[in-house]
Image (tube, rainbow, N blue to C red; front, side, top):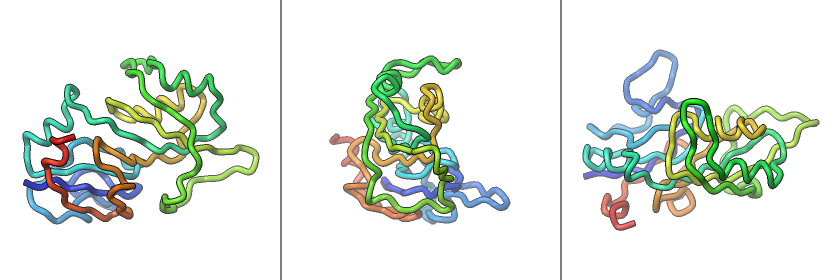
Length: 187
């Protein structure tokens, strides 16, 4: 049974089926019969888990067993205490209300690779970095949360899932490593 940690590059589709003119997981991972346990949209980067074990995939992705996920988020603007408080509280996003989470302002991660293409910069508008840790993960949730508090997301990198992180398993975009599946179960 394989459990693969993969650092998904920016603009790579989180699927194995090809789409003309777009890179997908199949361009990076050649192992047969593996599937992502959770997704990242094409505009997001970072850590993904993939496995060939359907039960493990279901366990990782199922809402009752969601592993905590941390996202490093570069936002347009400077968050104040009120914005951070709003991010951490439940937010009504229209189609669902988020669960409480952890959101803190951090220094720009020195270890983070440059994005290609780079994010836009404006001299008159500063950016800042947040670390947001969720127990859930709905479609484009982090982007929608930051927008709801007036801090549009410019760059989003998932840095950890449960016990695995890009700091303990340094991988550059497009790289992967196989780890024992029981490392997830013992967390």
